[in-house]
Image (cartoon, rainbow, N blue to C red; front, top):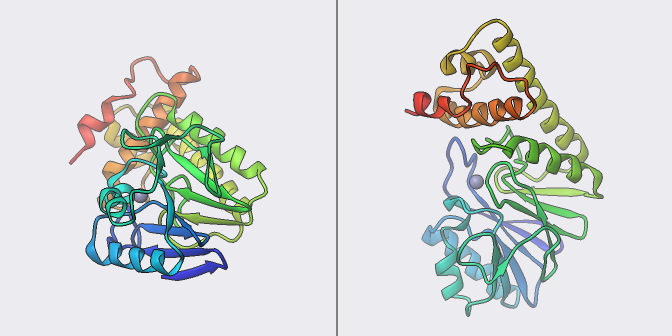
Length: 259
Ligand SMILES: [Zn+2]
């Protein structure tokens, strides 16, 4: 557990991995009551740590979910059952409050940040942004392999960059104390991937594996299937912009590259 500011406590789950980095971060905001952002994975030690911190902070006002991936929401049912069934805000089927951009939930303001997952939300509390997997403490995120996802993601990043944010508390990794620089780095990273992909297409490469090797050459083998998701998202964006060679089918890479 780490106190990040007077009113913010981070509780990190012991589920480290290539996609979860050092583990999923759950956050408690405020006291009397506290509000929980992402219950995290259903690991007994993690749940116990959250319950102890919630008890110290005067109970739980509600649970907010950034997105529906299991490493962020798996412990929802047990946390809810053991904290007196406070309201849940999210974009999934179990939510009492269905989030939309601008929804207020206790001290939190929901910001639609699609891209990594459909129905992904960040939460703003004063000048602190809880970014879920839209922005991570290190590395980049993978983008959902569907039409519109990357364009929507870039728009969400640009909007975040326009807000007065002093601290980003990500779903994985360490807090980000220079939000504007990090968001600019994220946008530049996607532009760089696109440049490499367009160059590979221009050089006549067509096989998904060859495109992946050309534009994601730095990605370790264990993240190759995640990179294939992002490749698909990039191909969709080029298609939407009329820049994809006609013989390429953007949804092909996943079938060929999943291992
Ligand atoms: Zn995650």
